[in-house]
Image 1: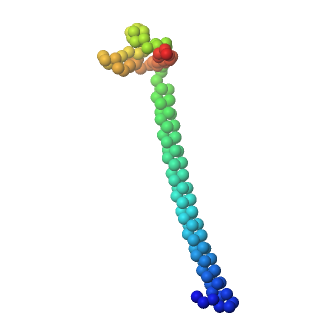
Image 2: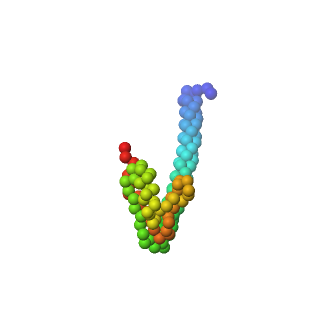
Image 3: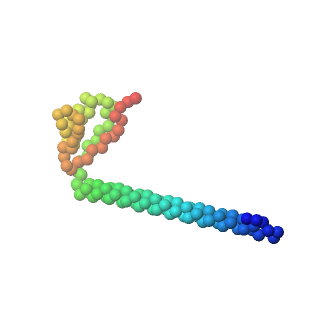
Length: 127
């Protein structure tokens, strides 16, 4: 491009630069919009999954509460301060009307009654 005395070539060059800059800005704006839309979609998905999780958790809690509400608990077993003493715990199980060993290997406990609950008062071992 030959520059004329009135600076015509200079204006053309300037206009081309402005057009290129505007095109780049438009592209960047489209990119930002796409990223924003993707983030919004992802956040909505996470919110939906969180709501589903809380609904499932709430349903599970309600189900547990309704099961226990239908059961009439008439007896409660309680033990505390076992402090690692297996003989003491086995003596408790021998007289308990609530709990017993579920297997001969003594690896699991079982309820002896359907209408009972058990509370462990803590303190399984000393330091």
